[in-house]
Image (cartoon, rainbow, N blue to C red; front, side):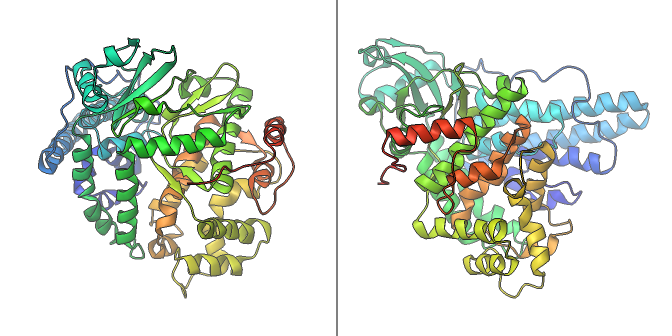
Length: 515
């Protein structure tokens, strides 16, 4: 995802239609002709969700054909747009551009929502990763976060009966056949157990496992194609890690174990919540948890500055306490996975994509932070990233150039005092990774992504996009000093003080023992 007009060359054919709106819009922006974000009247219509059922194609050819059809229609509309713009005045050109952006993005969102699987996940990521997208495009794709078309109630009931041995009307005292959320792999229903517990029941789409495996079959082609632009990238280990994480996400028993880990670690926390799993009503394709309630991300984005800053600090603390103290990272930090309670608590959902890190891997992350942000030792930082394989030894870039490039990702913790995460910072994080046409192209083309960094990179891609959308302000360095084991600093905010009191009540023990 780049701002360069050459970016289509970096997009593999199998997923070209997913980013058709992005690619064409950015090409138009590079030509200086596309309206500014938010131009045009009105907002996007919602993705249709009244379909009778969801049928997931099991054929890679069928899935790619659907994407290809979207791309072809987008190209045809773009040709028509160019012709219509020729005889339009400036105001009409902006209107035509906004209409094109919206229509293309809505079609992409609707197609991916119906397809489910790994490609829909890509669409979800595109909806929030780059703040530089035109607003109509981002809003249309944002429907994929929570408003994807659901499967028919009968299909959900059939999955539950096959997994748990009885229909939901028998298993639960009350069952709501209308889902409260529908996403890339499954959808969620409200229910009430026979012992009067309100629960959320996640049901996996029939055939989605085969669909994701079909999508992943093209992953090697995707990354081998990127090799032309990023010669330092070793696609084999990267693809293997992605496949492993996504296949794990298909196993709800694995997700349940992850969720139990986080729920136990944060039990009775003053401002972080993780729903408990109901094991007797959970299987490999059905996951039942206590029902969590709260506002969605959009409500918090529209709230006052203090509310946004509090929410952002909680998310930040959850991510980095989990990473450095629990040695686990929830690798899907997108806005649909947060619920914001009226009491100021944030509940974290969806633990299918979790990476557990070894002591050695955490030692590498810590050493990088110490070298670049605490000791300010460029030579040591270079030695570390060469040793772990982020950059080949002997690269001609100077130590100062390497610090200039990688230092962007440490700017928040380098700043003295409060600083604000902006949408520009989040977008620059994306460009530092994916756009080799800028001033750091030599480093980007030579850089590699070791397997242990595949999921951790989601901090740069996902977390900072979320914080940028919130416009969050905090003293991020002092918060991190509380959470870094190699500093173990005192509380620096009221939330930090509340967390310290919680830790004291539980005997100062965190993390729990990893299984």
